[in-house]
Picture 1 (tube, rainbow, N blue to C red):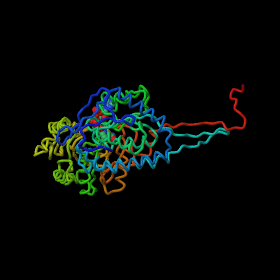
Picture 2 (cartoon, rainbow, N blue to C red; picture 1 turned 90 degrees about the vertical axis):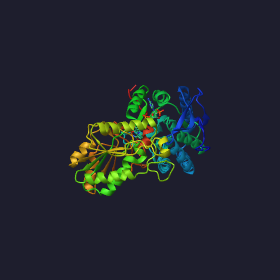
Picture 3 (tube, rainbow, N blue to C red; picture 1 turned 45 degrees about the horizontal axis):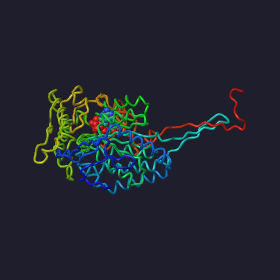
Picture 4 (tube, helix red, strand yellow; picture 1 turned 45 degrees about the vertical axis):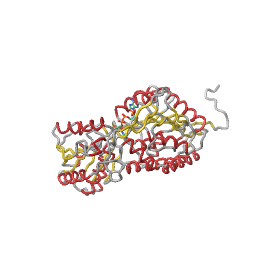
Length: 495
Ligand code: NDP
């Protein structure tokens, strides 16, 4: 990979070549820690989407479909190895482009590598079935790649979201046109370069960069694309579903969240505080699965809140390239203002701002989009800050009296992505996990993303699962074959 985090221009990768937009247009991408231009990037239009789709179709028919599963395993393992070899450089670039601490970028890249390894191993285990049939009929099923997949990813986990999508698609034998978010296009372009270096044929991984409202929307309706896999806002997901209906594309959607975090009176309180602070403030709260609505049993509420505030105030907000930083920059000044708007609206509706809740203006940090993590108490279910996805370092904490009230509060949302339960009572932990209407529940720990553990939403958090064995099936079509095996030929009409 010829990538260096000081490269000043990034081209797209279409059909194995580094190309500019046919229009010649470019756009700027920024470092949110300084609000300085990091690089220019090719700005694709519809003609570039057409070129990428044609390349993906050609590679599907002429190369990737004909590459055996075992060979795909070897190529994906090689790909994983190359990402590992470049991990320091990629982590630095990711941090400079999206503002998250460099240790977090490295951790997310490590998970991305594990995704490729997981699906490299899994693909050779995807088998068909033979079926029970009447005499003289024999039937079996096979799985074929869905075809050309359009993959559209957001800016909050740029490289990890790309890996979540690329790994199962490539393993299943699909080819890809991937569109990263305009705010964070760089590491996805590097991944496309590394795919070529790993020996994955030209045209299998195409990465195009440009405005989602234009080229993303065009991908969703494009007749040459067989499936769209999308991660982003719920409203964008709905628009994609509508656009994809025209060609009956397969669609999987990983959308927004407003996940609950329940702390019962029998919880290990210190562990619950430490884990809950992480569950909401990791990635500066710019996580779809951030558990931003904390509900605490009234008996331990005061102690929990006091410790939560104290620990939140200890979080190191700073230059994300420093190893000790825990809270990096938000993606843009506009996003920071949107996040702050939720704190302001909460306070206006009667919430108490216990700490943080303002832009950090000290020294060099004043140039970037740094925001002091905010804790709001005295909230109720009607407030905007409790109902809507903030996507920033803002948490609301409120008390509950009973287990059933806790579950009612947890489920009082249109979203259903994740949830966390803190309790040392095993039976209660199982009851509460069953009671929360969400795709992924964590118990006595905050971590959510593991290769092999299905990730995805209930309700308006989307549908389809990523990271799972089942995900491979979502990149394949099942085919049934029913064959006559009788000694005499069939003559159904008796003709
Ligand atoms: P957006 O939905 O705005 O953007 C996501 C991607 O979609 C970007 O690449 C964007 O391109 C593109 N896009 C924008 N408009 C369209 C369109 N009309 N048609 C097709 N593509 C389009 O989300 P954000 O970037 O703001 O990402 C944050 C959201 O992602 C949050 O709501 C969060 O909850 C969700 N998310 C969900 C996850 C999950 O697994 N459930 C994981 C991570 C995030 P461009 O950048 O050029 O506008």
